[in-house]
Image (cartoon, rainbow, N blue to C red):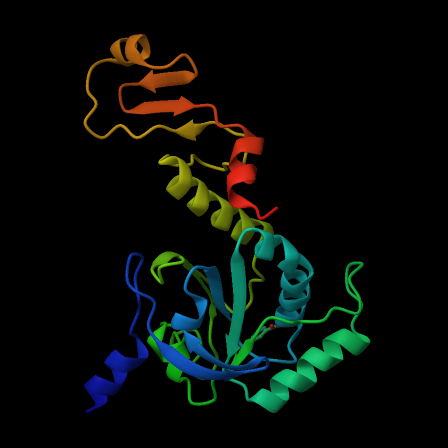
Amino acid sequence: MEEMKEQEVISMPRIGDPAPEFKAVTTQGEINFPSDYKGDWVILFSHPADFTPVCTSEFMTFANMQERFEKANCKLIGLSIDGLYSHIAWLRTIKEKIEYKGMKDIEVTFPLIEDIKMDVAKKYGMIQPNEDTTKAVRAVFFIDPKGIIRTIIYYPLSLGRNFEELYRVVIALQTADEFNVATPADWQPGDDVIVPTAGSCGTAKERMETADEDVKCYDWFFCTKKLDKEKVLGKILKK
Ligand code: BEZ
């Protein structure tokens, strides 16, 4: 019986898995996930607790960037194992009282899930008992329009997330899908992208000789090509 409990707590969805389904009460009404979000990219993220400083800085930052995520067809959904009234009071305090790094009057309009029983948090491996048994870690799930988990990032309680990196992930995943490429270290729109090498062989010289002129090969397994920023953003961002 104890063993069963432990297994339930550490259930961890993986990249490529369908996002676990759930129904939940949120600050924006009930949601049915992922079916309510078919056709959208989603960032489902957890935070340890309402009325805590790192989480407050994160919510203000995320809410301040929400329009950019919306333009990239990406919806935000937060979660903590606090109750709805705590969420509402915390978000009201943020809006009415907190001025931080030039951000003020910040209204969080994306849904924040109440998860007192930890049902959703457990399904998504957000409770990591060696970090904390009663708080969710800072988990970030990137879920595609078909409801498939495409990237997962976990941070401990003490470490606030880098939201520009989360935005970069959304754009890079969509770029990989739209243009059938991969993105190298530190990639940003406008940087060269990696051309798939599956099925290719030969030396860099041979690949260079047969490649388009905008392709650059560093060796037979490592070729990049230019992909204009305007082309990337023109495809991904809503007009
Ligand atoms: C915070 O958000 O500040 C926080 C929450 C839980 C543990 C540590 C820090």
